[in-house]
Every structure is written in C-alpha cells, then in structure tokens.
Length: 127
Image 1: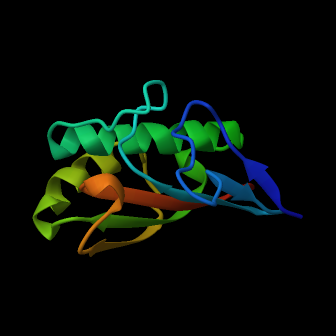
Image 2: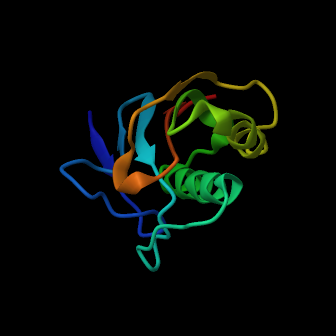
C-alpha cells in the first residue's frame, strides 16, 4: 500500500514528487528546504534561521501523517558547506528528545534554489 501525504503547511513540491509517501509501516519524507509554505518565499538569513524553517516544514509533514519527530528513524542532511555543521546540528538536535535517529550528513556542490541545507527523514508509523 502506498499513500501520498501532502499538506499546505509545507512547501508544495517543485518537481515530479510528493512531500511524503506512507507505506504500511514507514513514512518517507522528501528533502525539505527553507521555503515558507504561505508565501512560497525562500527564507533568508543565517543558517540557524534556514534550518529552523526546514525543521518546521518537516514537522508539519510529519503531523499530516499523524507522527512526530519521535517516530523518525533515519535522517539525511545535505549541506552546502561542512563549516555549517555545528549550527545546523544545534537546531536539528533541538527537535529530538532522545533516542536519536540514524543519520548521515554530507556536503554537496549545490542544492535546490541555492539553499544551504536540505533534510529528508524516514519515520516509522508504529512506536
């Protein structure tokens, strides 16, 4: 079973994909960047501001699927520069309360719309 999950509380996809796909036991959330879903504007500012918007977008998609960050089992963080790691990690970590998910963080040559951070998650539907 494959169920499409989309919410107006997160940016609309900018290509041929959905915000998330729910299966019988897992939720796969597409990478999110710092776009305000109300204005569709890129959130500019420091990396902590950018990362906060990414995490808010992820939170809203998780809520639409009726799960929370507690359900997240795996994340992938893409950075434009590894020097941003500490600040991104600080904001990212504030959304989890323990039993942290598995994760990798990689620096890439470029990200959509020239952003500095993109994060995707996989969540379990059952704790």
